[in-house]
Structure formats: structure tokens, C-alpha cells
Amino acid sequence: PISKATVSVLYWREFSTQKKATKIMQSSIRSARRYATRAAIEGIADSYEKAGLGKANIPAALPKSVETGLFINNEFVKSRKGKTFQTLDPATTKVICEVQEAGLDDVNDAVEAARRAMYGGEWGKTGGYKRSLLMNRLADLMEANLHELAALESLDNGKNLGECTAADLPLAIACIRYYAGWADKAFTGTTTELSGPGTGMGGFHTHFSYTRHEPVGVVGQIIPWNFPLLMAAWKLGPALACGCSVVLKTAEQTPLSALRLAELIREAGFPPGAVNILSGWGDKTTYGEVGPGTAIARHMDLQKVAFTGSTVVGQQIMVDAAQSNLKRVTLELGGKSPNIVFADSNIAAAVAGAHVGLFLNQGQCCCAGSRLFVEDKIYDEFVKQCVEAAKARKVGGAFSPGCVQGPQVSEEQFQKVTNLIESGKKQGAKCVAGGGAVSQGQKGYFVQPTVFADVGTDTDIWNTEIFGPVMSIRKFSSMDEVVDAANDTEYGLAAGVWTNDTNKIQHIVNNVRAGSIWVNGYDVFDAAAPFGGFKMSGMGRELGEYALRNYTEVKQVTQVLSKTW
Picture: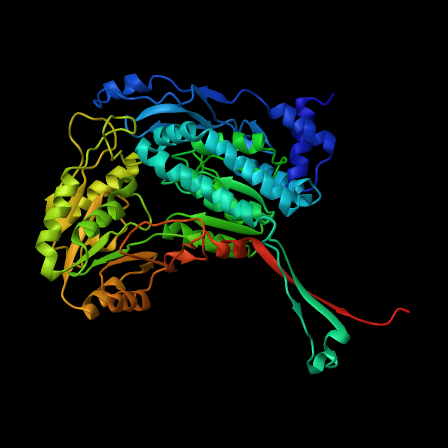
């Protein structure tokens, strides 16, 4: 038997030099790290009462305990440093449980597991048909456990349970199924006739030339807290379809649903190392060392990093990727999306669409229609109806009966949103609904559904990505005016236009610089429709066939033909 001390020495010798471990060492390391990592979930109903939220309808599907370990090589393990961090219910500020906190050493573990799986391991030898079966099996398991996943995500994130059950989970499952369909179709190359001077102009008679597509390799993925499972599906779907192995880091605010997903990944039959999921912070750990987000961006053994989050962090990831091994980078970043309403639109539909386009998920959407342009002819009536819709919106916990808007995800986000609301008032915008924190003796991070009218283009609420339930409305009089104003931002993620005039539609579509434009609708998503931004809203595309390009390399092969007989 190998002692724990010996295992430790062998481990550090191996990973400090990033050499391949022997099977005996791997087994010993796993045995030394395995321990009980589940934590109980209890007292949720009482916490609602104590937080002033009243009686909670706790879903029967909410699990009694959750996995809290780091998912590495198909096992849940303790972090190398033995550190944990708290994850909170933002509706009550109550600690749900302690979760293992990944650090640099744990990232190295996960990357090494992914490398072994990819190069010489079972996952690297798994063909497209088998990958498709595994992904469909995962989707089946997610569907079978839909209510549990939705309850867990709503608890950890604070989002409305009905919204999570009806939208987030079905979209995540559909995404995995969509890419399961691509798994045996993603690698289609071409044959090329070489007939130029450099090849003797013999064409197909003298050369056999073709391209082949291959997995990009081991990839790092960093997801945000606003749609944890959906963003995990957006990242994992194309990567697994293309045969890449993955090290995925969750947001520190919302780790729990992804850890349950990890259990389903293992149950579905994915081989060890194909998917590794780490919980932890971004740039720094709680104990002051390099955080797992930065470690992933800088890691020399990752061939790609995909990130969804803020523009500032995205810029740093590009720097880290360039200064390490020039790994591929795709970024889905911030937005300040224009939503344009013309006088000839269906006003009731436009009001409803603008309401969902802003207040969905407590306003915590990168593509939120947070700059609402309304033509002057209908402006007053439109503002009135927006105010009525906002005031009718009931705020409460994820499990509060009849509530449609939950808390902001964290105290930090709560403070940011309320500070921006105050700045809007001071800078001359007219607050016509809401206007601050919910003050009903509640402990959670609740913000009133807020509407500002007559918002100036020089205000912070007009130019800053708020990521909260704050609607900003401004009138316009002409097409040229609204197009110029819509493009007057550093972002270009999404846009909306409401009109029955096809000429106006096409003019907006052709001239507004945004990656997605919705016509007479908003927040229309499908796994087949690519999503991503112009300008500082990112680079590359999620979803659809386009996302597969992020996870493949193209190899050109040319064979000179000669007679062998």
C-alpha cells in the first residue's frame, strides 16, 4: 500500500512538471482524496418566515442534500487546500451549504484528467455516434430530474421557480439534444483539386488533397450566475459534440445545479475526465491565491477558453490567453441593447415584449432591452402602460406563492443596481415606478421593478449595463435619429424592433450593429439560432452550427500520388 504521505510527494512531483501519472499513482491519489462531500438542505421554509417573506411553497422535488465536491475524473473530491466557501439563498441571505473551493492545484488536477481522457483515454476514442448516445442519455436524465434541477437552481440563484421550470430547464435540455444530433455530423471535410503551378497542374491525377476536422482538444469553460444550467448547456453541448474534453468552472454565486448536473453526466456514462466541473472564484481565491478562472485562462495545457460574463473580465481573459499559449478564445459579454418601438406597431404586444425583454430574470440578462426607444406619437401612452405592468409585478422569493420577480443574485449586485437607480434620479431621469429596494422587512436582495422616463443619453442608467430590473425609456422622432442613438454604445449584443412596416424592419436590421435582432418579439431563443455580439459584446458565436467552429481545428492533407505497381 502507498501511504498518504507518499501519495502527496508523488502527486506534487507529477503535477509540478505536468508529466503523465502512472495508473497506480492515479488510483492512490483518488483514494486519498475521496470523502463524503454531500451537504444537507434544510430549514428553507423557516428561513422564509424569518426573512419576512411569509409562507413558502417548498417544492417536493427540492433535494434533501446536495453534492458540494469538485467533480474531477468522474469523482467528487475535496479541494487540495481543504477550503470551502458559502453559497447563499439570495431571497433570505441564509447559507444553503459550504461548497469545496477550487484553487490552482485543483485546476491542474482537472486539466490533467481531461488530457488523459482526450489523448489516449476512452473519451478521445469515442466516435460521434457514441457521443450522440451519451448526450441524448444526459438529456433524458435532465428531463427526468427537471423539477429537482429547477428547484435547486431557483434556490441557489433566487429566480422564479415557474420561470426556471418552464424556460431555463427545457431550453438547456433542448440544447444538449440539438448538439447530440450534431455529434456524428460535425466533422465533414472537403476534397480539393490542386491544379496550380506549384503542383504540376495535374489535378486529381497527381494529388489527393482534402481537409479533415478534428476536436480542438482540452477546453476551459467559465459560465456566469444568471442562467447556470442553460449556460452550462450552451458551453458543453458543442464541445462534447465535437469530442473535446472539458474543464468547466461555475460562478461562485451559483454552484449547486451544475454539481447535480455532474452527477447526471456520470450516470449517463461519460468516461472519466470527459467533463470536469469546478466551483470557485474567478481571479482570486478566498485565501488570496490565483483563482480557478484565471488559472483556466492562463493554463498551458488548455487549447481553448470560452467565457460568458462581463466585458472587463473578458478583456482580461484575452490577455491571459495571449500571454500563455495563445489559446483560442470565444467571449459572450455585456450588452446595453436597444429596443425600438414605432408608432405603427401593436402597442399591447410591444409593451408586453418590452416588459419581458427587461424584467426577465430580475433584469439579469446580458441581452436585456435596457434602452427602450419609443416613437413620440405613442410615447405617453406607452410609458403609462409600462408603468402599470411594472407596478403589477409581484416581488418575492423563488418559492413565494404568486411572485414573478425574485431577488438580485447577491449583495454586490443589489448594491450596484440600487446605486445606479439613485444616480438616475440625481441625473435628471424621471422615476415613474419603483425606485429602490423593496422595504417590507425583508432580508433578501430585492429591488422594486423600476421604470425611468425621459432618460438623458448622458446618464449612467442609459450607458451602463445595470443587470437589474430597471427600465429606461426615451422618445424619438425620426428613423435616422433612432438608428444613430441605438448604435451610440460600446456594446452590440442584441436589439429589438416593433413595427408592421417591412421597410422599417429591414432598415433597422441593416443598420443597427448587433449580433441578434428580434422583430416584433424579444428574447426568442432556440438552440439552432446563433447568439453573440458585435463590438465589445464579445467574439464568436454560441448555439447553432456556428458554435461547432469554436471547437474544431481544420487540417489540410495533401498526398502526392505515384504508381506503386
